Image (cartoon, rainbow over all chains, first blue to last red; front, side, top):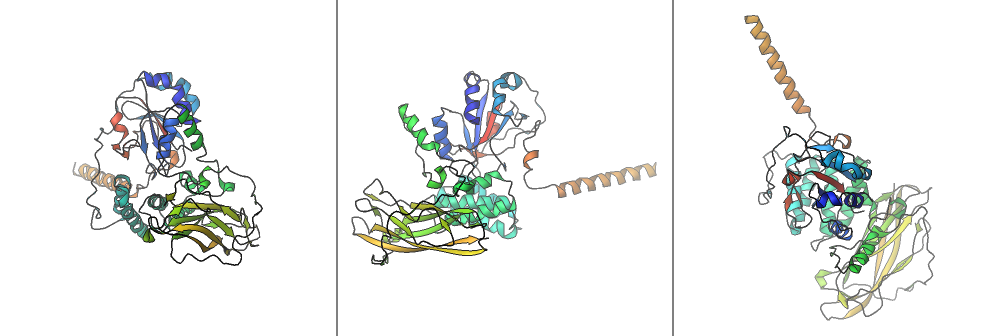
Length: 400
Length: 75
């Protein structure tokens, strides 16, 4: 693996203080990079570039930068690590006419107004990025608004769409999330990729939540191994703010697998009472948002206890069950999904059911409908009643 | 002599015009991937949050040291 390979090959040089390793991570969830660094025993500084301000099209990129800030080697493969001592570290470079090092001051956040009267996209984008990078997460909504404003005058700006998607997903992952934040993130990432299909940082954002047929690699299947090995060393793994979802650990696949439904339909007569109390909110996101005939999508059905009714999960009774009505237009990976109960007796976390669909190659463009329902125990208020409820779900799959 | 000066002024004007035009048509977007990170150029002066504590950090804080920089993702 590229980065740990570099670390191992240059350990001595690092310990002797002859070379400084630095990383810039491009992930949506940079705390996972922290876990990765802990796992591989790499303690050097990392900078966070989740919004891809560097505008890199793919990773990894390894550069050798001299003591004056000038790039001396680029496109370094891990093989170069063995000779980097003679090839770079032990050389002295003359100072050239480069810009002096400015102090890294924290940018001003208070003036969020546009920087000049003629509000071009540049000032809106700068506002958005400033708030997104340096503001507390409760201000991410302002970044979203500023990116949206910037896009109104530049609707075909790929990086703007990408960054708006990153901001939406950040808000989705926070307690300030609004309905459809995840769907909007996916929508803007897809638009960005339409504008520039060769942008692999953008492409990976969609693929990490997408179907197994389109995944280049698992993405985060290493997380459980990392945690085990760290614990074996007697250390505590760093906490992740957001656990990787099923999509983010699934192995890539070459064929679409349909798992036979072995359980009977749980409520064929529709006898379970509907969730009129609105205990649990359900939203669905298709990744990607539209599929070509013959292609597949991963559907995320997200269950969130309603903060307005102070609802929560309870782990003492039967777990959540999701049933899909069989239908002929789409291949469905699994028609019956049951979730394990949460570990705690009472909890309010967002829970997710994921499954994949594939439309046959001869499907005409249009919208295909999947219908089903979820059965769950939702509890009202603190120590309130737990009610067994059903909520019907309709999912649209767009075929282009 | 008078003629020489006029030619010089004309050339000066042409040079300034060319320079202004060059600045106007210079792309404001980031360079394409292939033109990025050219040997001999300074690394961009970008300020990003540190993963450890969120503090503003840039590579210029490491002047005087030789750097191996990895732009990567944990996946």
